[in-house]
Amino acid sequence: MLHVKEYFFKSNFLCEILTLFIDTNKCILSMHRKDEDSDILIRWAQRWSISKTGWQKSDPHHFLIKHGNDIIPGLIPSSDSGAGSCDSELLDADNHGAKRVFFPLCGKTVDMKFLAENKAIKEVVGVDGIQKALKEFAEENPSLNIKEVDQIGSSFEKFVGNNVSLLKGNYFDIDEEVTGGRFDVIVDRASIVAIDPSLRDDYVSILGKLIKPGGSILLITIDRRAGTDEARSAGPPFSIDDTEIQRLYGSLDWVESLTKLSEHNEFETEEDKKRWTMQGVDSLFELCYVIKAKKLRSSM
Image (cartoon, rainbow, N blue to C red):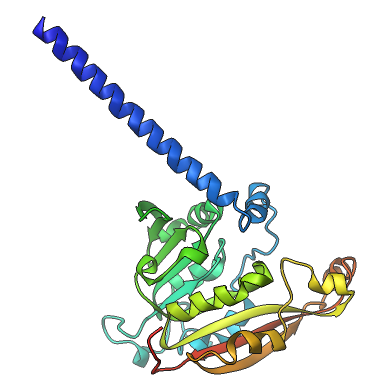
């Protein structure tokens, strides 16, 4: 009779553990769905669900190639150097000169792979609210050997690979504890143009808390320079011109300098021109800036 009681006790105990495990996983899945159903993310979740991601490119961004050495000296090798090489005098034997780079709202941009495989880079960290984006990046870049690891607190899932970490969660909840410290470089690859204009100041405030003293931000935006009022204010991607960039960064106490590096006419091809003019946009430029943080700054 004792053995029967022990059997039923163990069986009930195992059932309770199994139920708890199932309920916990249901809760986690529900939390993920809730995050992606939020007002901030639902538009992007819907687009990712049907793979409507025309902003994703197969090659590193042309501004990163053109201006990479402005933010990370030696990042782009000279024509007679091998791929992924960098100026040897910038790094010691243990790569102590290598940089940490942050990608806000990273999606699955190939810029992260390009940098993660570069000797000038110590680590790339990307954050995005859409799990599918991060999982597709991992699947499409098997050489990075990205695996899911434990959650960070209750807000972020973490995926870790070779010189790369991906965080799934709400960008506006991130801090340097979640990211494992501050960054030498931040690459805003048209991320700020993806958010509602009312959130821009909060977005920039977070970048200011994540950039190291003396660090650099490579900022890429689009400027709907001409067209109907409705088309120029539409988005995403939302238009951000020189005046708005100056408003957002020009008077911040941690910013040492704000420099416009170049702009690119997005009406180079008839196909692009037709696509945008059908939306009421008559002139469209992609803008690139570098923002340098002060080397000495007051506590934030």
